[in-house]
Amino acid sequence: MSGIEVTGTAQRRSWESAGLPEVERVRPKLWSIPVPLPNSPLRYVLVYLLELDSGVAVIDTGWSTEEAWTALVAGMTVAGYSPADVQAILITHIHPDHYGLAGRLREASGAWVALHPADAALIPARYGLGLDGLLANMDELLIESGVPDETRAELTGASMGIREFVAAAEPDVLLEDRERVPLPGWDLVTLHTPGHSPGHVCFLDRTGRVLFSGDHVLPRISPSVALHAQQPANPLADFLDALRAVRDLDVDEVLPAHEWRFRGLDARVDQLLDHHRQRLDETYAAVSATPGLTCWETTLQLRWSRDWSQIVGFMRRAAVGETLAHLVLLESSGRVRRSGTRPIHWYPAEASDH
Figure (cartoon, rainbow, N blue to C red):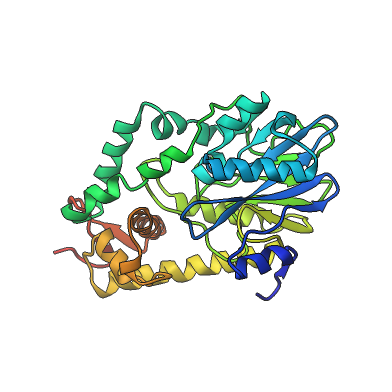
């Protein structure tokens, strides 16, 4: 990984041995606590504990499971704290592995919960009473994508199983882009970095020269950026813009939510931008070779990290959404166009659909 230096060496060793990293004191007043994820290839989420004059703040929480709660509490104990000491809960985005324990941790501590408004707006439909409408919208999107009837029902509800891992908490504080986080003793600024989620944020510690990058920039994998029922019209364009926006930040270290800490933010951003350039070209090539493909058919033409037969359930739906996100970006840049039919068929911009 040219230009990228692993700083979380113990974290990477644990990853390579399929173990769970130790709780680490990363630097003065800052701890890293790995919280396990059930049945997930990501294995754990890194929760960060920020010491305050009285108590602590956390960045992200983990899934709402007893195993995750036990690990989070044990990690706090290593650092000399308990859930009752938590004053603030900062959430990078509302995916269950980041937001899941927010409600339980607030109940145990009385801490305030902070989210970006764009993700806060999604809570009622995703984790509340608006579920039927969300499922209907998702089903409609899959119909337009050309997903076969025998597969569509499974994919429409593919994310329902993980709802049980969320103890939802309406935010007490909404953090806008470039807004300073009200944590005494910390010079923390919110950076809105949409793409993986509409309201995804990173937190920049200007004094400590550290970026808490959530899922926006990870050291090894590319975060899923998929078009779905709760995403804006062109999420991949938003994500690439947000990558460019953080590329040249003056930071010494990146503290991601998964895998391990590293240096070389600019180099890693360049890798991610290049990955999506290649993926856009691959998607365009598939549509050019066979004009009139649906999104589903295009998805089957692309290379994935594992054999398609091993990509099932939610991962399969995410793959369709990622393909659609690339098609929409190609459309917005004038390289492909869509038919006016249902399902939608995709053509090179210069081709006829007759």
